Length: 256
Image (cartoon, rainbow, N blue to C red):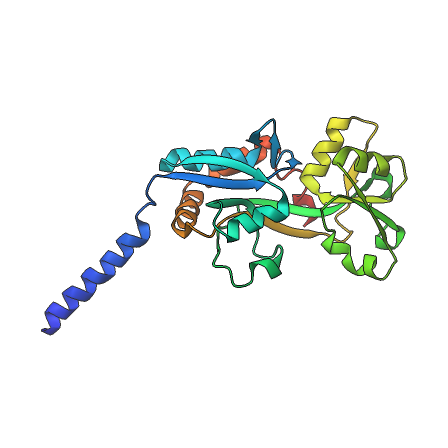
C-alpha cells in the first residue's frame, strides 16, 4: 500500500469512527425502572403512573428520538437488582455512588447529570444558623440513609428516627419533637408547603449535606445513554425550563 493510499484509508477509517459515534440509537421500546415512592416534584409513582420533572424530561427525549418508554415501579433495593440482571433497560434516578457494593463488577453506563439535588436538613425557621451542635435528634423517611450525618449518628451525638412518610416527619419537626428532618431539600420543602403554614420549615445549608445529581443508567443499552447525553447537550434550555417550572431543584442553589 502506498503512503497516499494508506493516508486515504486512515482518513476513511477515522471518518467511519466519527460517524458511528454520532449515529442515533435505533428507535425501540425501552423499559424504565423507577422508584415506587412519592418524591414530588422530582419524580413520583402515583395511581400506576410515573410523574414529575423526570417523566417530562425522559418523555421529551423519547419523543425526539422515536423511542417508546414503558415505566415500571419497584422498591428501591429490587430496582437496582433489576438493572444489574437486565430486567429493565434504563433506571432513573441513579448514581454510581449508591449501593456501591451491589454494583461492583456490573457493567453499567451512567448519563451526564440530569437534575441536581441536595440531601440536607430541614429545621424550624428560627433554628437556621444554630449549627450542628444544637441538633441532637434527626428524622428521615424510612429507607432514606442520612449519609451526611453518619459520624454523629455512629458516635451517639445525634439520635435517628424513621417515619413512614414526609408529612408525619415534617410535622414532628414543626412540633419540636425532633430537631431536624434529613431529606431531599426540594422534595421536603414542597411537602412542607403542601401541608400548609403550620409547618414552617427551612433548609439550613450550614448543616451537613450532600450535593449531587440524579442520572439515567443502563446495563443493556449503553448506546441509549450516549444518545441521551447528546440530547441533553442539545436541549439544555428545555431541560432547565422543565426543572424551573416543576420546582425540581427548589431551595438548593442558595446552599452550595
